[in-house]
Image 1 (cartoon, rainbow, N blue to C red):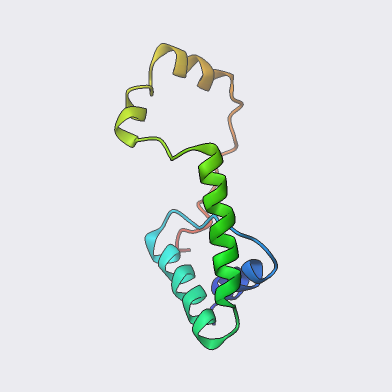
Image 2: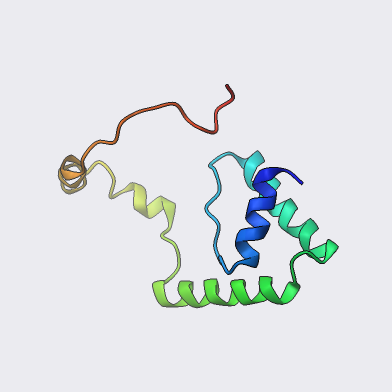
Length: 101
């Protein structure tokens, strides 16, 4: 089992309900497939997945659905948005840790 998958399985088993995974689809698929294999093998219970799903659904019920990307675009680069962005301190730019070496 790849390290990323093993860590994800351990995280979910330990009670993490929502994993933030790299922006690369291949990494996302690796994690999802690893979690599915862990359930099939019995390393992770279906009840634990259902519990996590229930809590995430409860969070979404409370917070509301994610915004419609088409509507969000209209708010970007407005004067108000750019003024807010200008107040956020810049982060140091470095190498993408997910990029191939």
